[in-house]
Length: 446
Image (cartoon, rainbow, N blue to C red; front, side, top):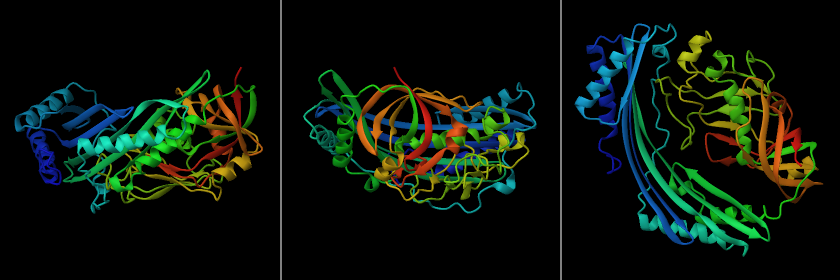
């Protein structure tokens, strides 16, 4: 076993997932699929130099879906004993007897199953003790507190590590599995100046501990981001260019992905219905999906239905090249699964030549957004309205912090109004994108 903390090896849970299918077949299921997962993790947090929490997690589970023709039943358990697995399959079979027929349900097509399961270098266990994690968290927080004397409080710093095994089988004869890991360091502090009190944070996450930013750097950035928000001022309601900082720019891409995802499309609850092959964004926008990126935070050799994943261009020069579909939504739309059951994989947005400073200069006078509050987008119409905070910019120079404002527009128009994409790319999740400059949005204030 790669990690002594696991109760079963990867090969063992792959075999268990395959064995579950035999039980389902014995109960008369025409088809079945099962997945098993194991995970272990540790999180240590400190606040003002003192240990705040020490958390451990050890999770395991199995879920099975059975099909009796066009009837479907699903059940899950956290008990992986042989009897519990059999009882869970029986429960799924009993559920299927009472469900309505659905002509679109069923396994993904057999010809789409992954044949060559690549090693994507996703598993890098971090054998870190609590004491070592505590020292790293303390160093991170200390670096943040040292930035400025106005930083007088802390929400803490934390160090987390986790590993997991995943296995999936279905009655097409497919069985696959892989190990993965994810680790992180984060810090959040509070600064005060007169009547102004502000907080901000920074974090780093990676598959391997050596790929994390240093705790000192993370703390320094958290401190600098906090201090710069002090003494914010009001601005008048206006229409100006808006620059979404890289950590927030991924949210714009998420809105686009949601609009071209199967569930929203077949329910007709998307502002991008029937957009395949059409201009949906600025010609500057190019999005490439790479599921096989080594150590990628959203890499996988096959999706949640065993369908092989493939690299592809989703958006080319602003033109939509493909949807994001699992097998069910694909059938509802009369199309084929794109290997996205469970979500998108690593989305890489092509950067422009401008760094962050150049984007500010290009914007001239406008708003830099560094925080968004609430969820305010209508997926059907694309109407967008979010509480925000950030900085007012004049002549390409940050003048002062801004808070208690609302930014508004329409996502379809915003995507087409992208005038620049920065090269300040952050890798903190499934989307890799730099800061994005929108030509004009409405800013509402007092």
